[in-house]
Length: 227
Image 1 (cartoon, rainbow, N blue to C red):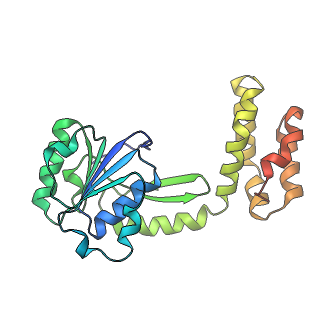
Image 2 (image 1 turned 90 degrees about the vertical axis):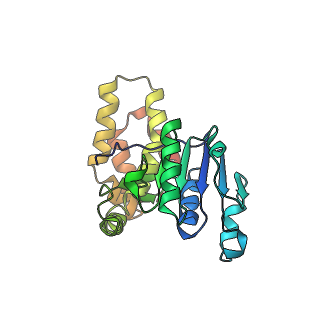
């Protein structure tokens, strides 16, 4: 299976989670990090089976909880669905209905049945790196994620700074090749190391060397809380 890599904007999306066992709770937690417009959680087993911390996720303002089984009408206006019931047969049925309706569907423990998988990912200060083994080895994906967390530790601050800088550079109205050279120069410089070492003087020096004079007065704003 060759998956198409993508990052989804769920801020206006209606989502559905079917099943609220351990897997369903993990899926809901990941969904809520993306701030979807609403999430309907269907839980045939009922609240009596929940551990104490399960209620915290359900208290999110965009979550609607129902202690009942899935019905086809639950897919009305849904953009993304997670099938996480204990039954492979039921999960497969949900996936087929999603496919018929053009709804994205992730099937817990059976990636081939759905239309997408949720990759392992690393998030650091606005920097998100996702990785997948194509469903072949979740254990390897977890190991790679741990390695990436260590490797990328210094890049979070750099990502934040570049995010602050980008609109300011674009507002100067320079040619695209000039803008490209600025950002490539900063990425290839020692700015990451200066930020990781909290070396304010060195970071300022690198920025001055790469940025137009018009941006020198805003260096402190760019470096605020980063060094």
